[in-house]
Length: 389
Image 1 (spheres, rainbow, N blue to C red):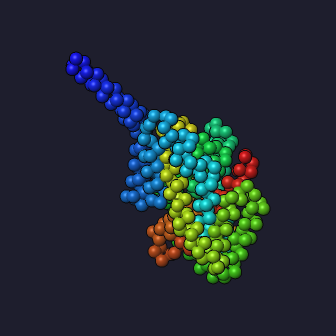
Image 2: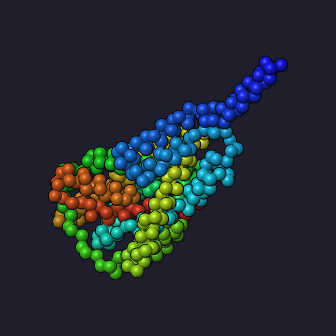
Image 3: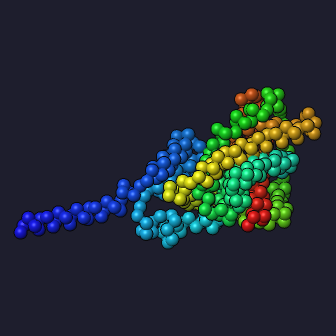
């Protein structure tokens, strides 16, 4: 009798242990989960050890670990399960709430003085958007639907929030791959851009010294976001959510009477949104939905679009110099800064320039096309959204 009861107890314990094991990640993992966890660890390494965009790569990398812990469906814990905490936080990405708030903070941090003092630098920011439209044509040529091609192509602007905003409207199913790709290439600016810049410029061009920018008055700084908003949004109303918040943040900064609001926008607000955006974008790379043929193609197209954008900015400056007097020419090394990776691309202009002349300071000049690139990528997104939404 005792032996029978002992057997029943053993079976009871065994059944419960088996049931418990079936709910653990060990019983539910697939190879894809391991792949994505390794990618997340690489992101963490690049952010922490290499200091590549740590404010982005650390939250995204950790989010990849969170999103790729396997579980049994129906527990309402996954990012794609309606009503889960992660799913609720992810709505800020899927519905496009986070990107405009990021732009608000960027506007409150940005000094447009370099652009105001030399308006022709705006053309470099526009030329760099060639990467977006070049990638769009490539994507459609290899079989992407027009809306998917547009959402993928925006990676060429090197602007993560804009990529998320546009993909949330045009291709929400591809958002995870697009967002991760955009932020990856933003972080890899120091790796990708310098070889392209050196390849497309001569030593003589790299040594060009530009005229010091003129001093910009406070009135000009206040008027710029007002006229910037009216001009860009009258031309591209579909870019309003991003452009309005960018210029609103800037006028909070430059007006001189809303210091507390500006500090909140560029401090606690943008930090909070960056945490939520990075973590949920990372978690959205759940292997069962993320690892697809299109995701791999998006990464390839993203790299191409970023290279095209960098080359477009540099080559445009070389072309533009043909029409400028010798003492007023632009150093082509600032052409790379036409992408929207602020201020990393401008820093790369400075770093590469000083490899050839340590007394040539390009950073202030490069900030002009760099902030123009922020505006340009938002305008490009608005154009694509207006045509395809």
